[in-house]
Length: 204
Image 1 (cartoon, helix red, strand yellow):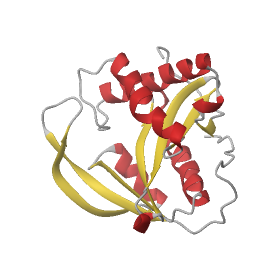
Image 2 (cartoon, rainbow, N blue to C red):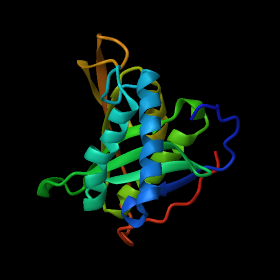
Image 3 (cartoon, rainbow, N blue to C red):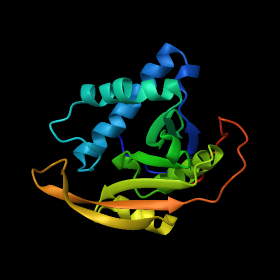
C-alpha cells in the first residue's frame, strides 16, 4: 500500500470468512492483512512483534496463528475494507473455560498508518461489540500499550482501566520494556440470533 489514502468516505466493516472464499481471494486477503500488520509494527505499534519484521513473517502470522482459529470458529476476525483493500482489522477471542463463557478477549486492533485518524479503529471496535453480544459475551478484556494511541481510543468507548503492569513487553522499535494497561468493558446482554452477525458498512 504505497500511496496515502486521501479520503475514506465509505468503509465496509465485515467478518473475515476465508473458509467461504476461493484460494485466490484468501491469498489476496492474507497479503493485505500481512501488509497492515507489517506497517503497524514498523510504525512502532505494540502488537507483539519487533523489528526486524518481514512481510513474510507478517503473512505467516495470519496463515499459521489466525487462520486455524477462524476455520475452527474459535476466533472471530473483522476487517475494514476501502473498496477492495483491507485497511484495518480486529479480532475477538471468546474465552473457552466453562466458568468464563461470558467473556472474550479483544486482540490485534490494527489500522494501516495511511488510514489513521479516520474513525476506522472506532468502527471496528463498535462492530466487534455487536459480534461479542451475538455470542452472549458480556465482558470484553484487553491490554494495550500504556500511553499509546489505542489506550486513548478505548476510554471514550467505555473501557475501564483495571491497572498497569510495568515493564510488560519490549517496544517494536526499541529495546526498552514498556508498560501495558489492562482494560475491560461490560456489555449489555443481547439476544443471540445466529453465529454469523451481518455487519453494516460504516461511514467514517
